[in-house]
Image (cartoon, rainbow, N blue to C red; front, side, top):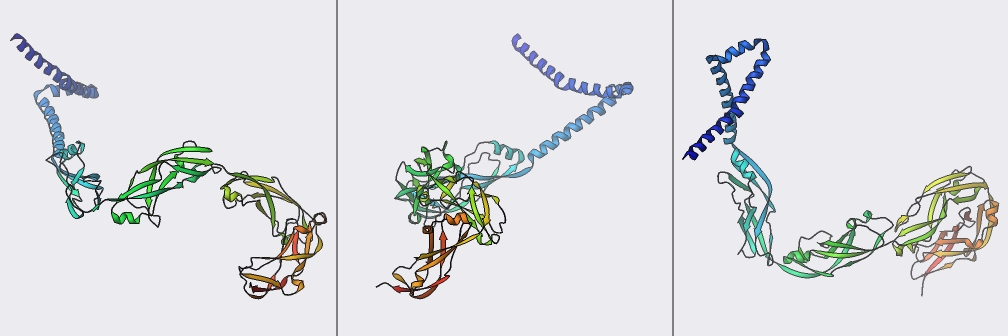
Length: 454
C-alpha cells in the first residue's frame, strides 16, 4: 500500500516539475526580459505585475491570446474542404489470357470532400487502387462502375469518370516473323556501322482481338545503338530488346507480343577504302583572258572513306571543286571536302589547293571519234554523213601541259537521252582527264539518224 501511495506522490511531483519547467519558468523569463527592457522603469513594472489587479489584467490578455490561437486552429480543422487526387491508376480483374478489354481508362481523378483534418488524414492513409471486376462478363459492350475502397468513412469520394463503357473481345493469336530496325545510328562513331543483327528468336506470337491482328503488317526488334556499352568492331550483346508491331503505314499497333522482348547480337564493322582526291576547276572559261592553269596541287592526295562496303566499291575518287572564275594570279584555296552519298565518314574534312597560272596556248587534236551515250532500248543510231563520225578537238592550256597531253584521254560524245526515231541535230560535248586543259569541239553540232532495231 505504501508503494502505491508513493507512486501517486511521485506522479504528481513529476507533473509539478513539468509545469514548473514548461510553463512557469518560460513565463518568468518572459516577464524578466520585459523588465530588463524597461530598466529604469523596472520598479514601476514590478509594482504593476505584483499587484492583484495588474496580474489579473496580464493573465487575461495571455488567456485571450491563447483562446484566439486555439479557436483559429480548431475552426480551420473543422472547415469543409475538397482536394483532387489526379491520375489514380485503375486495376481491372478479368481473364487476360482469354479476353481483350478496350475502352477502360487507365486512370481516374478522385475528389475528396470533408473536414480539412479528415481530408488531410485520408491523403496520408494507404488506399487501394480504383478497381473494376469484369469477371463473368462475356464478349460484347458493357457499362461498368468503377469502385474505390474508402480510407475514411467521414470523407466523401467522387470518381471522374465513375462509369466506363468497355468492349470485351475474345483474344486470338497469330505467329509472326520478326525483323529488326537499327535506331540512333548517330550515337556511335561515324566510322562504325552495323553489319548484321542476330536475334535470339525468329518468330513471336501477337495476341489481341481479330480486327487488330489483321492490322499487323510486321513485328520489329528496335536495335537502339545508344544502349551499346562500348561500341567497337566485333560482336556486341543487347538484352531485352523491345518488340513493336506496325501496320502497312508504319504506325504502331497496340497488340500483345509474346515474348515482348528478345536478345540480340549486333555485329559492328568499319568498312573503309582509300581513294585519290581529284581537283576539278569550276568556271575555267571565266579565268582572265590569255591565261590558263599551269599547275593545280592539293596538299593531300588521298583520303580514307568509311561507309557501306557495297557503296564504297562504286567510288573511285573524291571530287573537290575549286572556283577559278576571274583568277588573275597564283592563289591558294581552302576547300571543305563534301562526303559522297553512302559515305559515313572521311579521314580529312578539308583540303588546301594551290593553283598556278601561265600564258595560254592552243592546240588541235584531229580525228577524235564520236561516242554515243544514253541511246534508248531497241534503237540504233547512224551518222548522216562521214563528217558526223569524228571531230577536231581544240585544247587550250599552258605549253608544258599541252606538250604532255595524251590524245587518247580525250572523249568527244553526244547525249541521246530521250531521243526517239528520226533525224536529230545534237550538240557535241568534249571531256578529258586533265583538269588543267580547256576542251572544245570545232564542230559544235552533228546530224544523226535514229532507227528502230529490226
